[in-house]
Image 1 (tube, rainbow, N blue to C red):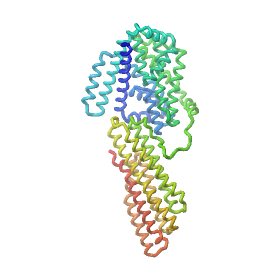
Image 2 (cartoon, rainbow, N blue to C red):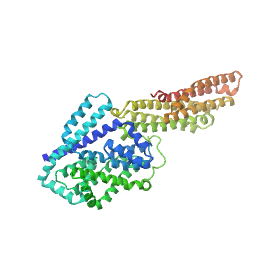
Image 3 (cartoon, helix red, strand yellow):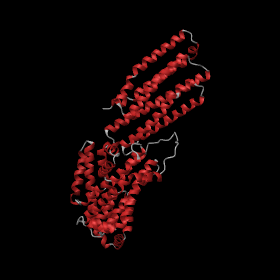
Image 4 (cartoon, rainbow, N blue to C red):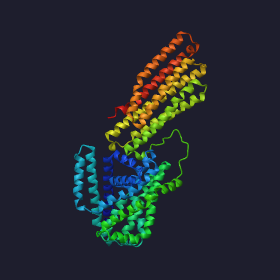
Length: 535
């Protein structure tokens, strides 16, 4: 019993070390990971290289797949762009296993001490992440040392001997065992580390260990499967692709387990290195085998997972995913997409101001007011989502972008309120009083509304593209807006002095419309301040 407790403790320490170092490296890389994946995904070979590099950094192919699911859900990548990266992730996951196979366990306490010291003393976030990376590696080797020290004692346990013997005799059972353990601990590297220790202790022959390696690769699919639940169809396809590559690769490997084991045995003398090499060759083989058929695989998976049903609940977010909250850069990208959706709603409301003021259409006024409720809902949900972001992993650049985004959605919400509570009330007043604008007055309202609408369109485009030049154009329109509003007021007063009937009847409504369009113009200018203020 004591031996089993020690083995489980070593396994837990090994797993924690892998995750700690991977998470620290991921924080240190920051936005570069997103740039690495999204920037190199258009070319298949570059996509494979970026997936391998990414997974080598975060030390988990499942974590890479989770990130891809988040990117696809946020609309930052398409499903087809992820296929090469998924195959590259299979190659990248061999890095931590090769690292474990070096078995520098004697230096584990030194790495733990150095990592803890750096993390405790350092004041900069990057140095703290480096310290945690070293600490994670030390804990990983320390866990392996505990497993190696106690694995030999299992030989005295009859039940353990029977289980290990059954795994050695049946490759299928060993594959299932590896898959189950890997799914349970959500790490193929930790499972392979256990097989490596058992093999080094002479308890598990190489054929059984190689079969466990194949099963461990399949077991990581469980994490992707759970992450895809409730996601968009595109995101589900990413998870299905990850599962399909792993399961098909394992199924193809089982019939050739004997020749493959013989080949691996000739690559090294050390059992640990043989197992690490088996993992490397298996994953490289899967990538090389499936890479030429990614287009065919994409069509097959798209047929298996149909598109989302058309139509949506307006009071439901489309891009926000709580599973991305521990990755602030990704979560901010999702919130930005939702903010652009909110901008579309507000832009449509402003567009309908003219027909609401001109036509006798009370139903249109009600529709515009309902869309303001949708804009309010989106603004509230985006703010609540941003409030739950993981602060410990947020750098100054991401923090600045978050504050800017909150400012943007706040100004959009104010524009929606002005349209709903002021301009629609004026439209309803004109309708119920059966008033009609003069031709000259209506032409001025049309002109000023067109100027404000065009400027809002520029501001949204500048926000979407983070375009400082376009943002400056929006700001440059402010003097023109103020001047035209004054000129239109003066023109209206001149019509009042001349006794024009329509101007006398609609004077209050006319001037209030100009005032509220000017207020909207002020909020449009405020929309682009976060872009111009960026360093």
